Length: 252
Image 1 (cartoon, rainbow, N blue to C red):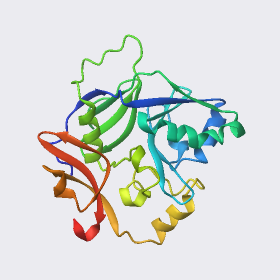
Image 2: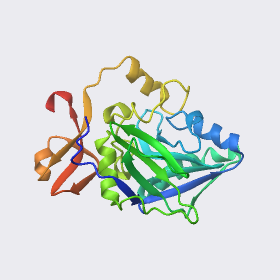
Image 3: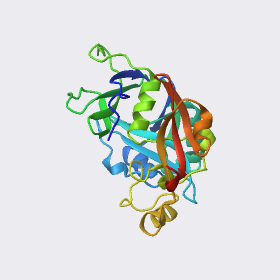
Image 4: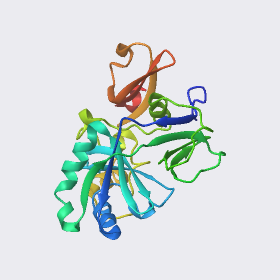
């Protein structure tokens, strides 16, 4: 159950997000992504974004991102610090699909609202948990964001953690597998077929037994969570610290 006291609703300007445009024939970009990322890109549609990841051959997460189909543009929304990880990893495959990748200037708004609220045009739904729904909004000309309360990027990131989306930063690249962070529930498809690291990740899904997991823990001092590995960034809000903590299940 979500902690409703911590949830903040509104619209946040995602200044810390890089936008990478994958340009080429529509089907070529799709095939490139489908063979590399952990999610099923056949489910990406206009107004329906998708959380995804790139992994290495051993199933360790290299970076997390959102895939957005903006009319006919395939866009990757990723933290600025991790953009080069994505670009460097994909660079070797681009020529085979006649696809190019480059960062573009594009304003991105993150929207946190109640599930019952209406969806506007240019809004790309990501997921909902309980009463909280999050989506990506790509502003167009003459479209006002006045109906939404201004939200800080920290509130946006905290809302995602509350929903169980524990994303990594560049320092965490190559350290964790999806099951350790709960990302097998939100960023991995076990029905789409092959992708890099798929064999090991699938083996953990069907044959493995989880010994560790990640939970969001609120604390006042860093030493209060020193027994855990901190995944991603710790967020300070409402006079508390909020950390995605990875540890043995019995230690929670």
